[in-house]
Structure formats: structure tokens, C-alpha cells
Image 1: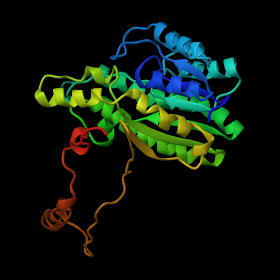
Image 2 (image 1 turned 45 degrees about the horizontal axis):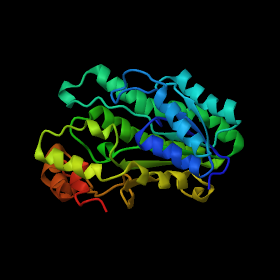
Image 3 (image 1 turned 135 degrees about the vertical axis):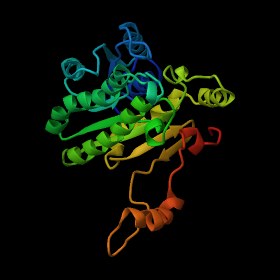
Image 4 (image 1 turned 180 degrees about the vertical axis):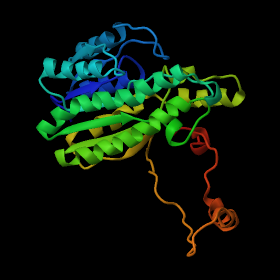
Length: 301
């Protein structure tokens, strides 16, 4: 499905990104395996993880090259894309997968913890996507696959930075889909449920947390790759601006924000009439303070 297409996968040194890179290569793509080799919190740098994935791909007869630039810097993001151009002569697919976690409750979160996560997830997705845009425009073709999360789409404790970044990525992806549609470029999101190094940092102090982690452990990262391969292929030309979720053997199409309920008052509203009429009329449709495990409460299938 992807013969001779050139794919950039950020954060591909392990977990979901690694499985994406291996799957793309197995379907004939030439892969730029980007990973700075940092810890889950974004500290340190090691060329080993990216090169190890490249070695795996080459050992299986595939084609790949490693890149260790950071997505969180504009100049470095351009070098990631340039690696594809210099090595393979073109770029066809960008998978914005790189990420870090700096989990802390909002009232204790530092500015540095906020900025670090926003820089990698949200700014990084923009930087790499924007660096590839001129090439996609000139060839009138391209695929963006952006990783979002139920932490942003639904909500979660202790992840204000990550949640904001991931919901921002969903909006960014939709804007990219709108702006690039006339150039035959698609942009979609995947919200993954899977056990990975990042998810492995979830606290397991309570019985509820332990049970949640055990569920996540049963969901393999490799289960997400087939959807990414499809979205990168020519078969997905008509699919753009969508948000998908993958949970073991389940694929979901996620809803997007639309008007849910309205009330009208010909003479206009006052704070008093809002309290007396508007809010009671809409209250039955309010959303609870759900987290992803409240919405996806059944065992993975």
C-alpha cells in the first residue's frame, strides 16, 4: 500500500512510534525514524533508540534512516523533514507522534512543566507539519497523521499540560485539513489506547489506578499501526479532518464539538432569567466530570 512513499515518524524510537515505523516499512515505505532518545519526561538524549529501529527495518529488508533532532525547535523540525528530502528525495507522510509527560495537578504545575509539554506535543506537531507543507503543496499530495489523546478529548487528572496540548492538536489537525484540502493533502488524528513507556508512568497507588493500568497492559501498541498505514495510503484520499480512536481490536470514530442544546428568549437574557430558565433547560445535557476510563468503561475487545 505504501510502496516507495517516504514517511517521517517522530518519536519512533519505541512504543507506538516504533510500531508505526516498522509497519510503514513492511508495507514498502521508506521511513525517517525520528527520536531524540530522551526519557519519558523529555530529559537526556540518545541516538540509540532511533538507530535500533532503523536496524530492525533494514534487517527485515526495509529502508530507513535515523534522525535525532528535536521536534520542539523550529530549525530542528526543519532538519527532520530535510532528512527525508536529502536521503530519499521527497516526503509523502508526516506522523506527529513525539511526546513527553510532566504530570502534576494543575494547582501545583510549574510554568516549566507546562511549557515543556506544550513545546513537544503542540508546537512540535505544528513545526514538523509546517516544515513539510511546502513539499506537500508543490507535489499536490501528502498525509498528516497526528496523535491526540482522550486526556484532551475527554479529560484526566493531573495532566493539564498534556490534555491542553492534545486537544490543541485535534484543532490543529482540523485546520490543516481545511487549509490543505485544495492541495489533495489530508490530515487526521488517532487517539490511541495502548501500553507504552509513557503510559507506564501512570501512578498505581490506588486499586482503581492499578486496575486501569492492568487493562492498558492488555492493549498492544502494534494494534494501532494498521489504521496509521491505511491513513497514509492512497486508499484514504477521501478521509480527512477526522478523529479516530483505537483500543485493542476496536476502532472508533470520535465526535467533534457541535451545538448540543439551545434556548431562546425574544426579549434577551438577564443573569436572573439565565439562572431561572436557561440553565435548568440545558442542565440535563451537561457533561459530567468524566475521564476516559469512565467513558470507555468496558474491557478491551
